[in-house]
Amino acid sequence: MVRLEGLRKVYDEDVVAVHGADLFVDEGEFVVLVGPSGCGKSSMLRMIAGLEEITSGTLSIGDKKVNDVLPKDRDIAMVFQDYALYPHMTVYKNMAFGLELRKLPKKEIRRRVDDAAEILGLMDVLERRPKELSGGQRQRVAVGRAIVRDPRVFLFDEPLSNLDAKLRVQMRTEILNLHRRLGTTIIYVTHDQIEAMTMGDRIVVMNEGKIEQIDTPYELYSQPNNRFVAGFIGSPAMNFLSGELRTGRGIMFKHADSDLTVRVPDAAQNYMSGRDVMPVILGIRPEDIFLSDSPYMEGQTSEITLRIDLVEHMGNEMTVYGSSGTTQLVARLAPDARVKQDDTVTLAFLQNKMHFFDAESEVVFR
Image (tube, rainbow, N blue to C red; front, side):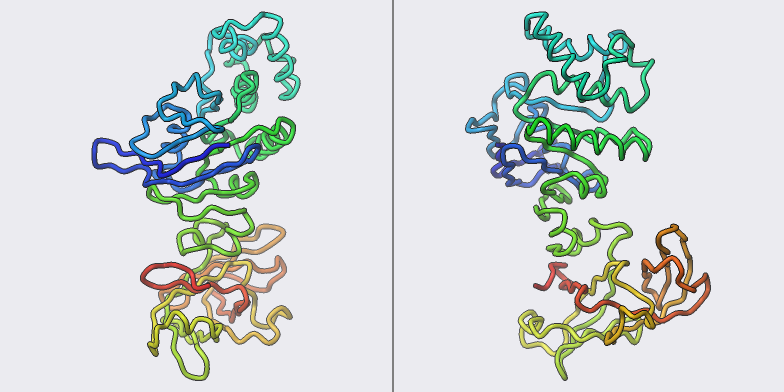
C-alpha cells in the first residue's frame, strides 16, 4: 500500500507544485496520475520515489513512513520517460547492473534477468546494445530493469511518450499484462487521458498542483465533479454552453447564444437559493448529440441550429465542428450522416446526458 497524507511540495519558497495531496493506493492496484503539463503529477511521483524532498505531509509505503528513507531503501523501481539505458552496456548488463551493485549471486542475477526477458520478449536481444534496438525494445529493457528488482511498487513516469502511436498501444497492452501477471502495485504518470482511461483501475486527475477527482474511468467520464475534469476526460472534449437557469413552468436552461431551451431536473432548484435567474454552464459530450430527425431523438426537445465549419470522416464515425453565434460545438455523428461543410443543420442533445455546472465555482450540480 502507498499512502499520501497532506503531501506538499514547494520550490524556491513560493512555487507550490503539490498542494497537500491525500491519496491511498491499495496493494496490487494500478493507479494513474493524469493532468496537463505543470499540474504536479511528476513532482508527486518523484516524492514517492525519493527523488524530490517532501516539503510537508506524510508518505508511507506499506506500514512504514518513508519521508526520510533513501530511494534505494524504499523497495520501489522506477521507469523513466527517456529509458535511461547505459549505451555502452548490452541489454543483459543494463538489466543486471542494479542487481550486481546489490551483490546478488550471479546465478540469481541470471535467473531474474532471464525471467524478465522471457516475459518481455527480449531473449533474442540480450547481447545487443541500446543503439541496435527499436524504441519499443528500449522501453521493454527499461521495464525489465525494473522487474528484476522485484520491488513492492512500480513507478512509471510517462514511459510511452517517446513512442509512435502504434507502439504506444502495444506497450499499453504489455504493461497491463505485466501487471496482471505480477500483481505489483503500479503508480503511473501520463498527460495522455486515453492512456489513463485504458490502463488505470483508478485515475487521479490533477490540475495546478491539486487533486480534482479520484475515481474509476467510468465514473470520471460519466460523473465528473467539475468542469475541469469534464473537459479533460474524453476526446473530443465535452462541449460547454454558457447560459442561465430560469424559474417558471419548472426550471429551464436558456442558452446565451441561441434559441436552445432545455428543461432541467427539479433538483436544480436546490442550487438556485431562491433566485429566479442563475448563470450556469451546460456540458454535453459530442457522442450525445444527434441530428434532430434521428430516431434517437424522439421526444427530445433540446434543439440547436448549427453552421457546419468542418467535417472529419473517421470511417466508423463522422466528427462535425460547427458554430452557433460565438459558441463552438463538436458532435460525433453516424458515418453516413448527410452533412457537409457550410451546411446549416439542427442538432438535438440527449437530455439525460447533460451536465450543469455553477458558472462561478464550476462545480457540477448533482
